Amino acid sequence: MQATQIMSQREAWKDRFAALEYLPKLWKLLWEAHPASVAGTIFLRVVGGLSPLGMLYAAKRLVDIIFQASKGQTADIGQMWLWVGVEFSLVVVSQIIGKAVDYLDLMVAERFSNRLALKIMKHAAALDLASFEDPAFHDRL
Image (cartoon, rainbow, N blue to C red):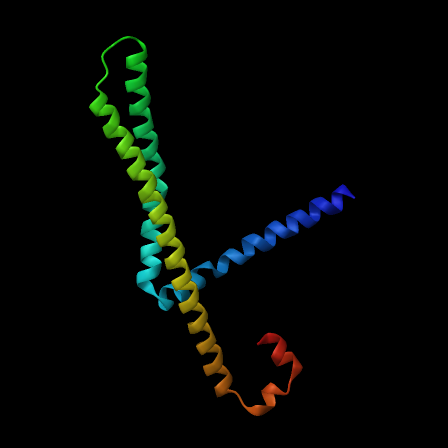
């Protein structure tokens, strides 16, 4: 039983990797649907991916200030509040970026869906009536 399960997992992975050959076509269709939204979502995802690094650095600075104060050294309270503000600002910006990415993804999906439906309709309009009576054609469509 394990051998057949391993074989089916291998087949599944082969199918997944085979599907990657369609990725360039998909990217082309998405780009044609709405280039500004695709570019915007890529940019915002990169910036959103970097924001945890900024939050980590701000948290490090806060911990350093608190550690200094725990050792009895004088800690700059103004500096501490500055880093608290930076941390809070980065969290807010990260949330806004997340919402903007969701919105742009929705825009791309809507435009992509509409564009694909139009392509299908144009192709269907070019076909003869006999094609629509063929069940195999409906399966392919």
